[in-house]
Amino acid sequence: MDLQTLISRLSDRDKTVRAEAMHGLVATGKPAVPACIALLSDGDWKVRYRAAEALGLLGDGEAYAPLVAALDDEKDHVRYMAAKGLGLLGDSRAVGLLGRMRDDENEFVRRSAARSLGTIGGEDAVLALRKALEGETTDGVRAAIIEALRDAGVDTALH
Image (cartoon, rainbow, N blue to C red):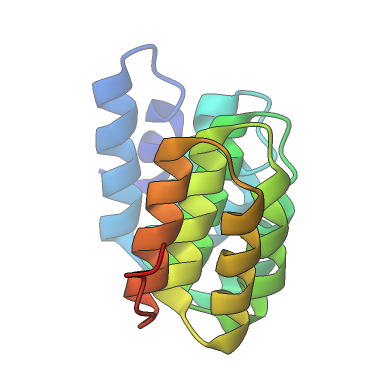
């Protein structure tokens, strides 16, 4: 399937068609990166969500700045996927930005940011996770933070 067809299918009413289109973009590889970056500005949040997902899975460093910008998207689904994508990129520059997501109103965004911090790892990520854990009151998010700390190599037996 060509790139234009995949892009148009991201707007389909059927969730399955949108998911298949996203996977098609990922299978396309590097040529899909500029299109996915442009789609982060689409008026439909579902298209932005799938574009952020594809960028994370593509793992191309060119996606770093656009995914960072998507952390401020008005739609929580897009922020969630942008945080996840940054974790998939594994770029340590994202640690401070993901750390500030601990204040996001949506618990799934906070979980995604924590998981990404655990994936990226390193001292700064561990500090960000510890700070997030101190202020987090939602059990599911606390569990995700503790798991992320483990992923980052921290003994969490005391938590």
